[in-house]
Length: 117
Image (cartoon, rainbow, N blue to C red; front, top):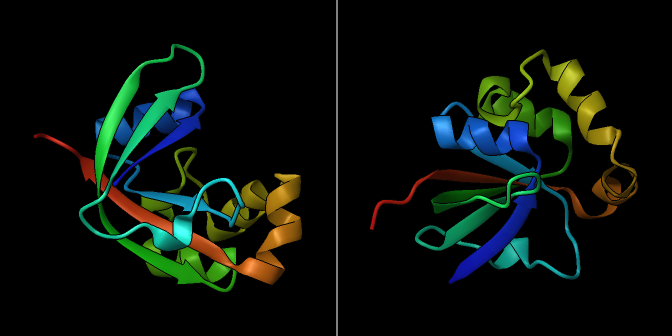
């Protein structure tokens, strides 16, 4: 299965460069993150340039909160902006939908690598 996700330029570039390995996502009725599995692909679309980048899903982990995800997956693998666990928690909570939904649905850590068919 291939999924399509639109993301800003900084995380898109970090995924392309291989420095961002994990995309953190919160449940949405429009994208079934809970159904994603190893071997599926994600096409990330750069919101600015519309460039596409296809990645292979290595694994999907589900966490009860952002702090646990960052501590387990590693800040350097999740955040394209760098920083500490506290910085990451603040970054994720800055998204209104995320702050409201994480207590109910948790957060998914989607580990990806560049897909070379």
